[in-house]
Image 1 (cartoon, helix red, strand yellow):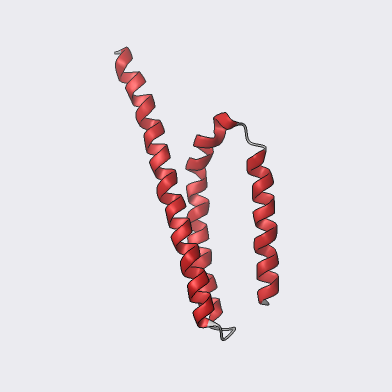
Image 2: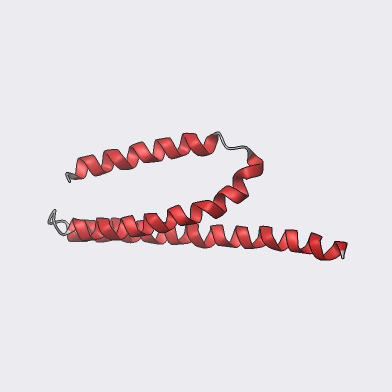
Length: 100
């Protein structure tokens, strides 16, 4: 695939993602973050594929740098999402144990 097409797909997906998340009520952001961890895992796989494809375009260094940054950012998103989800679940467990 041509690199310009890949960049256009990235920009289009970022814009669509922004408008989808913008319309989500604030009460649903934490549960939504839990579900988004799976998509961030897919982003990590996509970054790995992008690094592999960069060798076909004879740009291995640029592909490795951009892919590496994408992998690090997606991993931070996954860790943060699991942290928020774990914290949310602990809050529910405290309320449950206080009633007993």
